Image 1 (cartoon, rainbow, N blue to C red):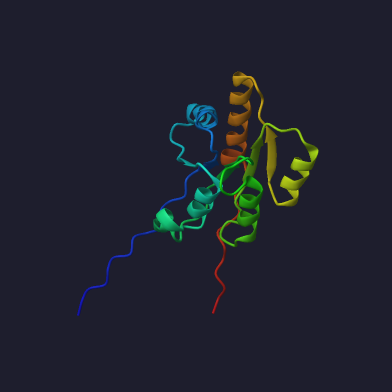
Image 2: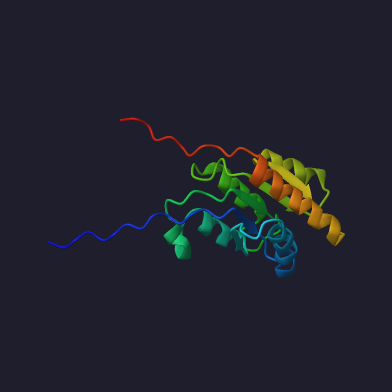
Length: 161
């Protein structure tokens, strides 16, 4: 008789998952958050497909099976492979991720885009300022609110049998 293989606990969730394809935007987004609190765990998905694989523990992220979603998802809309609207739709229609806070970061001021984000379930939409110092302040304010002040939903309660 062989001994059962040890079951490793699910990977802890990152504090923030940034879904952004531009390396420059990744750096401009993560630097102010790291300055605010270097102990925060940050993950980056470079396209919509990688983001969904990470969130749903598919492919190279199978090791995340059973792990809770990130405490905050920062989402760009203009993504390769699967766009941000479809990523948001998938997040909201999956029971594992449906309550995860999603903040859309956009440079657009198109009211139709904003309306569509909220219709799909975005928790917040933030227009990124052009000036670096203003962007830093906005991103730190977003991180402070969602990671320090916001009350996250409790883990799903399993039904009693």
